[in-house]
Image (cartoon, rainbow, N blue to C red; front, side, top):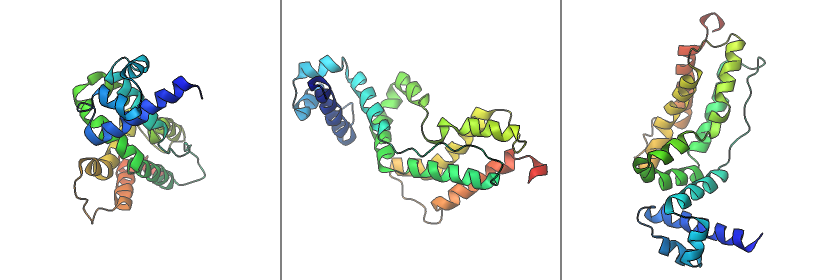
Length: 201
């Protein structure tokens, strides 16, 4: 690894730690340089602003999130079982320590930076990398009837996020009666109740 790339990673790792602990707004570029053990000029040689550094930190953190293999629709397995598999994979990612860390680093910045919010909103992670294609293939197989595939995919994921991701992000106490398995099954059953073709049920 070249020295310049090594220093760039030092800066990113230092910023990640500081942003997670103090928030990006409360972290100065001077502190980033000090923690990374580089000069402030070196920091600005790699990142011309704190916003650019934050983008790099989030992209680096996203690259470390474990994302399961993309699941492809098949006629050889019941629709409900396939959706359960997708939901379980998504839930595992949403509740993982690396993903929650990203969310905590980015959350306050997204409220103040519409451009960054739009960028992250367009960055597909987890099942959103393939779920629209899965739905499209299920429609072709006459298993689902969906007018707006993007809306249906987001509806599925947002239901999961509402119960198992956002409470953890905000530090809310989790309801012991609402288990992750229950959320997954109810999400899948609601999706099928809305979109599965009745004659195939």
